[in-house]
Amino acid sequence: MRRSFVRWMAAMVVLGVMVSGASATVFINIGTGSTGGTYYPVGAAMAKIWNEKIEGMKANAQSTGGTVNNLQLMTDNEAEVGFMDGAYYAAYTGTGKFEGKPMENLRALVPLYPEPVQLMVARQSGIKTLGEFKGKKVSIGAVASGTEVTARQLLKVAGMDPDKDITPENLGVGDTTGAFGDQRIDAAVMVGALGMAGVVEATTLGLVDFIDVPQDILEKVMKETPYWVPFTIPANYYKGQPNEVKTYASWNILGVKADLDEELAYRMTKALFENRADLVLVNSKMENMAPENVKFIMIPLHPGAEKYYKEIGAVK
Image (cartoon, rainbow, N blue to C red; front, side, top):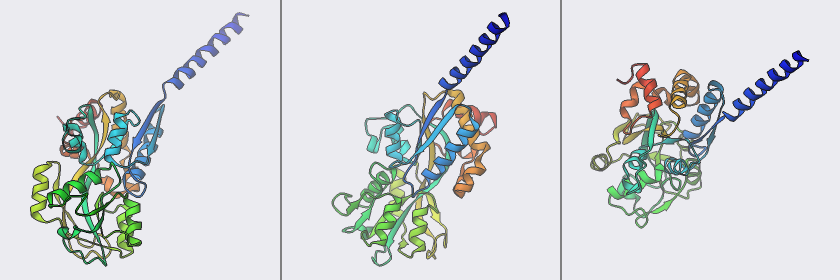
């Protein structure tokens, strides 16, 4: 009788541990971008790493409108992690599109890769300069995306009203490629990693050419928004692109909120760097996800991430 009672008690303890473990499951929703870009497939690979390497984690990559959408999802507690281009700086400081509404609890987890502005024009359009966008149909990125913020800033600095001087088309990466193919747009302001699928497709099909960002415009943009840096797309990087393309870029980051558990943030950061090879297989640009590139991040690191960087000597 006593033995039966002991076995029953032991079973109850095991059951309690199982129930306790089940309740400890952590759900992480990752705001990425459109399926034709870089964010989504890399985000899916990150979710796989976290699910496999961190016990109790259930991470999921969500296709979104991009940076601005991700920031809003995080504000609304619908995402815990977000891929972000340089617009994260405006969100943190409460400037530009985020005027008067600083997201002061935004923190950085890891630096990702530089993401250049890529000005594309339909090959048959005859457009040679940014100024010739006036009066044309221009893709400026999906609604509430970092691309839209960037495109509107660039056009304004170039002396154009994005709502009056062009016909703005809010298209994601894949839809922009389709619009070029159907001759529904004349140009596009694309912001994304070199080699992102939508741009590769458009160039492979011979639909587009690239144009430079004029030096005077580049200098004005960088003065207005300090997270931008000069960038050159190497000649022949894309099919049918024989010359270098002068433009500018910002560093993408993986952002989280300050209230993310410190130990969890540490483990998430550590897992990504220890399994970076899996991310590089998805997109070679993830080779840029290196600890030393935290110097390009312009907002505070999450304490959990900072703990990891200090542990490996990347920051003091």
